[in-house]
Length: 358
Image 1 (tube, rainbow, N blue to C red):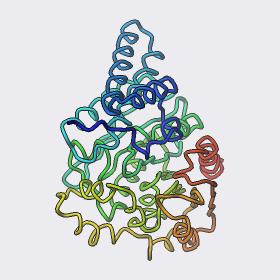
Image 2: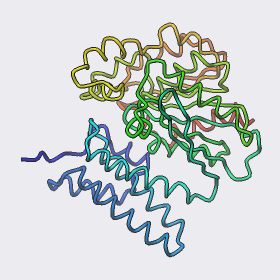
Image 3: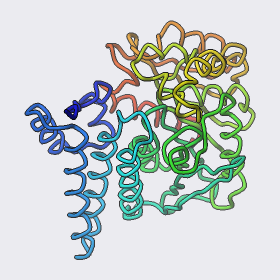
Image 4: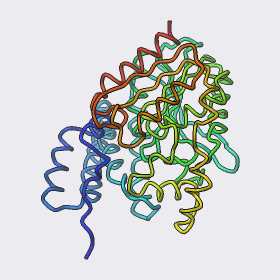
């Protein structure tokens, strides 16, 4: 008998709403899953319906409506495939729909120019998008926006859009071990992730249509990654924002299936889990690195974060030698301040604007 899959616990109401799920789709999803339907199947079906409607409206010339429904579809596909750990035919099929819907939808925004980005990296490539606000000056600051271990550029797009609205250019990208770069191009996760960020920074600085002030933003595991990069590349960064990131990555292995997800992202087989835990994840720490962070630093965290313990994260802040550093703590047992997303987002954008747009 085929198991009926429930909505993943990690996809809380606040997380889904904060990152683009339409409230009407949420209502339909909850009702159908609670009535015994399969979460993945319902998400894909609802996503297909929105995608088809978007295509119809685009043919009519209704670009704004088409954009809305393409992005509605993306949000549904994204939470549909979320808890599928391995690269099955089902997962890859749904993820291709995410990429197709996002590509169609993002190019219908009228407040920015949109450019597809492919960055060669070692034996693979990293894939993403460059957004530049309309009428942006040639020296417009750029923020690299990164997802985490389980939510990638399409989920992080909600933050990217807030930054664009405020006047920042954005490089929204999947690095090694993330989303499109991993699933379709075998760009595997690395301990020394800062090497990939170095390529991204140089790409931005070498463009003639944006400035050389580069900030970096990461959420959840991505928050750890950007803090690590700031420890190595502060001299290249105008600011670093770590939202919900950790000090010791092994801290998050208490979450079911996370070791399996790390193993797959490192390009290893299921049987290599012990090796991944003891020889790779063990090295993913800010010990001896955090004290080299000298660029402006913002850390956002919850006081009862179930993924990365706040007491460990406080070590990142304490050890960082930045003269300009801020620790913003939100209350509640929550991860990445999803419950307070509007306040967290606006706080991030104001903090960055005060330093890079002033």
